[in-house]
Image (cartoon, rainbow, N blue to C red):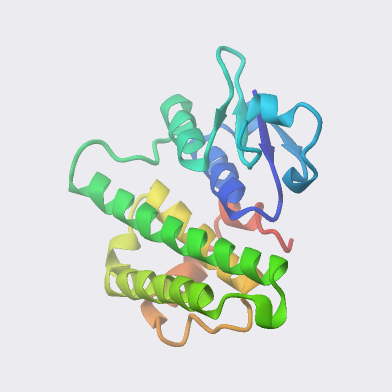
Length: 200
């Protein structure tokens, strides 16, 4: 199998971290690309042209980070998606909050890249940053739920917080979210996070 990724993509980072946590990383060839360059043939693998994508040996390629992560969980030695139980809904709630942070952050970054200065939509950016702030507030209030065996929720939250550090270093999310910051300081020491750090 082959996992196609970009080192700067937080969605691809989620999949790469999941590969490490599930024990699948040694079974997968990692191939880094620049999706913005639209490499020849890549849209045959992933028609939407984003990363990550997982090229399988036994079926068509899978794309979209959560689909890739579920496949890795299904085939890995260590499960990161809890069985049907309150723990599963907690992990998926964390995943939803983290993906919300990522979606809003990436959209804010794209708006700044493609519409510089006064041409950037302040209304759009403010709305996305509000989404980030509210999701962070939720995670801070539920920080105790981030403890315990590693789940897709924890992985996603770590990747979302890491992306804020990577692309929005001027915004201090830690000050208003001390419990979340303390959790991240510990979780960020895991190999799945250190080995996928875009700044490493």
